[in-house]
Length: 496
Image (cartoon, rainbow, N blue to C red; front, top):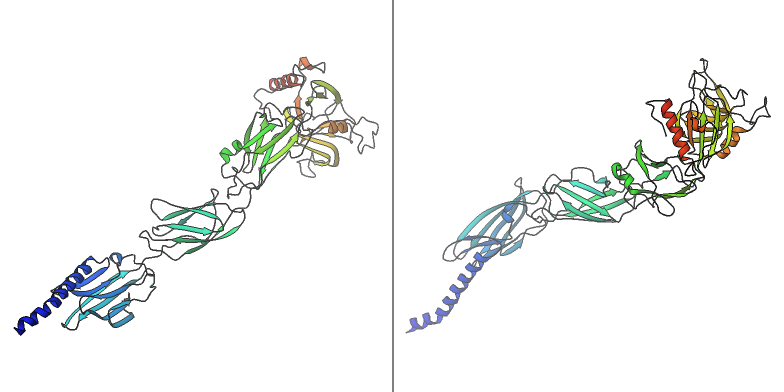
């Protein structure tokens, strides 16, 4: 009777004990952590924070070990580095955390002995794992944004999520391999240095130590023209835009530039590069006379090869004068000044001698000096050498060919020069002080860009010195002159 009473009393205790053990066993099997359990009637062992298969372990997250099973304890726990050195040891624990953080890209071993003293059971396990490696940046940490406002970071292994912060806005883009990260910048100052912090992760999501960079931005692009603020220009001077450095997109640069009269009407012409930094626009057939003209860019599309942009829009204005043109006839040693289709003055001049002839063709005044030192290409002491200081009223129209005053002779009407067009002048003229000031008049009447046509002789239609132009601007006369030049020089390229 007493035995029955005893079993009746402990039966509930046994029932709930078995239920608890079974529940704990289920809980152990269902745990999301790594579990190392000795199976049997009463399972026991330990659980540990998941190490994701032993690779790419986050070294900054604490690894937690906990004894599982009725009466189980962690009798001994040791942490070893890759050389076998003990980094941490503990005894007789039910739950503990290994020291953190660990080092990146290191191999570690955990040795755990779990036991249940009341049953005399003991189990030892070893767990090997490697912490996540830090991708190495291939290249300097100080780098310049490229022409497209981006910089590409090259790593020796794939990286995962990337975020970059600093004094400028940066957007990160991966390539297909994950080795290359492109940082695209916006809202930044030019010619400036920015400290940037790159926060990134491994492909498996392990956060890595931030990467510190210094990004420098390109200095501004600068541009200037040869016509800024000029007035009364001749109709053939090409517009030249000179940049302080070559452009990153030379092929499309001209599409971002506009040349128009003040009312907005575009002026037809052709753009072409002259060297690596100079872009030239030649109006076709010429600039409109007596007009205000503007050259501008269409916004922030022009970039230097280093990525710099214009700090402000290019807007420059100039104006042309009336339709003025010069015609030189070598056979008669005559120069005609034509304005709006009418000859306003004729000069008797001296052009090049037979051994140093004046070049023929169509040109324009490209440079002017009130006084200019003129020197031959021949070395001093050699036949043909000359050097003259302060040559007055010099206007170059092709290479070193020029209109200028000549105070050293009075032989106008016959060839007497080394190729230039000599004109009478009073300037410094002590031998013939009463000559006409032809060179001075032409200098004051002329201008940069003034069209110049040099022919052996005038076309028959121009022999009388005046041919009315249908359009009132001398276009027909200029066309006839150019046709005559081509007839005199078959195959010659007319230089504009």
